[in-house]
Length: 242
Image (tube, rainbow, N blue to C red; front, side, top):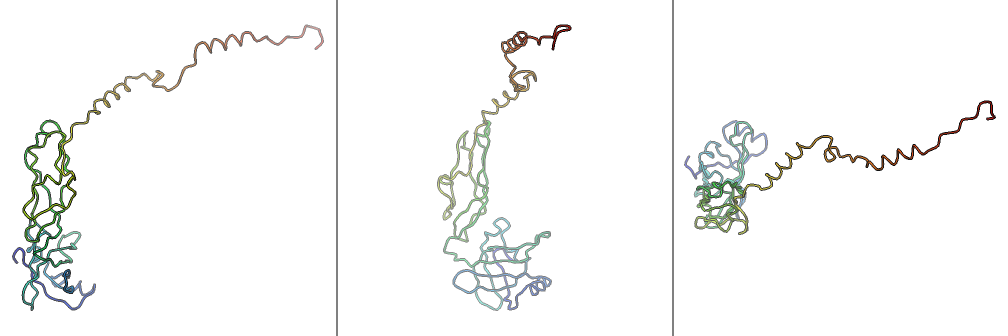
């Protein structure tokens, strides 16, 4: 099976039980839909499906679907797929009919290339988008988008409007959207470290450390004088009346 080509057979019996039997025979259930034509229920080889996809583009590969017993091919793309949880092979596939003359939406990985002066000066690179939504003709969807960061200095950013895209490809983001940015080291880290050191040097008995305010000395002295001025209770004379 060649990259970009896939062959399928029509199936008339559907259902969970039939799908299980189909997989036991080495095939998987598939559906082809989209456009003006009615959906088609198909069966395809999961091995052939894997081989038909470009190893780099993956789902963004334009496929030419041939149905046994019918003439011509149908341009499709792998819209969705179910894979085995452990083994990873295909269990079900959704094929979407596409018009090769009209743009489609796709998600493309982003790669940063070049040596960034801002990072060399101590800054940090923040890549906001690792994949980008693009609009492109099905046959010319790029495998990835490379962004040159060799001119990016400290505090500078690359926005969606700055991207250099292949001909016929547009990015589906607002022009002001930040794709990547170089930020300076946080200046407040030094202040935080100084504050921690001052807190460690504070004594447990200090006012600031204990959080308790000692009573003023004047108030204490006044309390002692008041206690001394209070007369003692008179004792009855010996032999006198109580």
